[in-house]
Amino acid sequence: MRWALVKVCLAVTAMVVVAFAVPLGLVVKEMARDRAFSNAEREAAAVAPALSITTDRDKLERVVASAGADRGMAVHIPATGGSPAVDIGRQRAAGRDVATVRKLGRASTTEVDGGSTLLQPVALSSGAIAVVEVYVPESEVTHGLSTAWAVLAGVGLALIVGSVAVADRLGVRMVQPAQRLVEGAHELGEGKLGARVPEEGPTELRLAAVAFNSMADQVVQLLANERELAADLSHRLRTPLTVLRLNAASLGDGAAAEQTRAAVAQLEREVDTIIRTAREAKPQTAAVGPGAGCDAAEVVRERMGFWSALAEDEGRKWRVAGADRPVRIPVARADLAAALDALLGNVFRHTAEGTAFAVDVHNAEDAVIVLVSDAGQGIRDPEAAMARGRGSGAAGSTGLGLDIVRRLAESTGGDVRIGSSVLGGTEVRIWIQLDGGKPERKGHRGAVRRRRSRRQPGETGRSGTGEPPEEMVSTFNRSRSLP
Image (cartoon, rainbow, N blue to C red; front, side, top):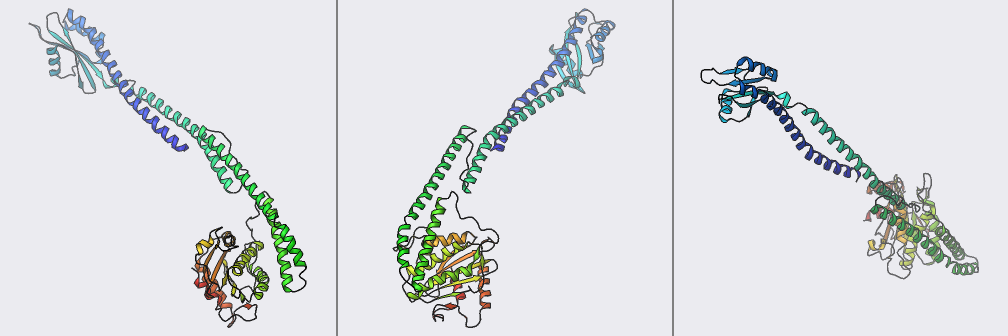
């Protein structure tokens, strides 16, 4: 905007200067010419009284010399009666021009080498017409013209420079508030809720700054209300959790009782975390720094250990592959555990009892792939399932589980894909990028080839029954079925 305003002002001022300077320069040139010929007319008029009194050559030569013969004055007297024609001074005009002026009886100018001549007719006492010729050199016609044009050019240039300077100052006055408004919008978009814009500048930009600050205040207030609402809603869960904890304590001993008490304890910790996070002024989802993250294989083994008890109760066959060695990923342990719980919870919630499922981990140089598959009925519309808050339409489905998984993958530059599993049901692929770039199919296939090369013949992973189910084929062949 600043440079556009300067260019517009420069163009307008330049056109104004040209529109006035060019005609003014031509007027100055014409005035210089008129001044030169006016001087020539005065010199010719100085000789006219002498010509009306006498035609004596000697006397006329003295008059011409005193009037300006050194300027190139000449007098042409025609022959009258017995007197011969008299020519005094150097003649520069053509003879026919002199004869024409004598015949017409009025002054005239004609172009000659090096300038112009003024031919002025003068009546003699005898009635004849003499012609006084005054030479006007070109240097006299253009005398002072260069200086006048230089002054005009200087004035025009000064006007242009001054207008550009004024336009630049006006542009700065307009651009700076706009730049501050843009910077404030960027800061607010980056999560700096304290970003505000000075309410100054032109009226329109000042009103825009007022509206921006009002919007920022409303955003802060809305976020505070949302945090308080989340904290209040989470706090309501403490009463039923207390009842569950007391009931779980009375279950006695046994694997199922221990699993139930562990689940209740974890649920209490999650609710406390939600309340604390909601009441804090800043979000707790900061990016993971170098060297941070977790061991994906360890988290997978831990969560599968939790879900295996429920799987055995429901007669589900399950398996884990690729979690026998450390796999570091740039994701917080709690986030990965929450994502796995969301996917495995969907398996138990949306498939019938006895439906088999599997979790596979593929480790590549630039990415880690976690596959969660089942032998259920599958997902008819994967895109709708990935939409936040839509869910499957069944009771207890909020649609937030897959969104949690998607945000986890996208925070590393990866993604989530839903496809068909060779088990006959759904396969969810979580692509976790290790270098923050975008996932590529080449890295996926490389991970499959490396995992297959490390497997021993006949090895199929770990199962809750000790042996893998016959309907489960190689985990790595399933990865080719992803969309």
